[in-house]
Image (cartoon, rainbow, N blue to C red; front, top):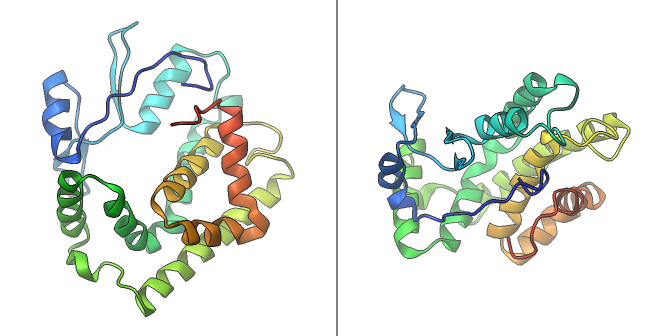
Length: 219
């Protein structure tokens, strides 16, 4: 929304309050793999149209159609970028337990308690067995680096600044959003290690997307 210069206000919620808050405004739930409902953020409430949209990709699709100036799906690339989203997530999902442990450490006590219980249920693994320090944590980091080595090769093949060469798109925002999350939750030395990979590529991608999207400094 910053990229499109659309004014917006963020409402922050505790994890334990998400379901009740979204039900209260009539937001639609997402679906788990087993078909059951799950209430997730982000949700967009557009005061201009009355639209209420759930899920990041659906929100971006709606915004690009409703506010087409500065499209993030250039050249009708939305189907390919949707496929990119899944492929990119698949690169680091095998190492995600180590990241999730760091997420819990930066949450409020109430949200951390809910988050740990929910993630343990999702993965069917006790929280203290997620990614303990030692060989398992080291293995997760190796998987994470392997995933980003693959992403680096994708960027190299683009022959440009962005994943689509010289054309900025939502694919780059997807990459940067995860990088922003990692930077927020990883310890300082861990982020330094991560951002040194591939010649500092990921710190540069994050900086470039933040500049392109005019992300507020205190976001």
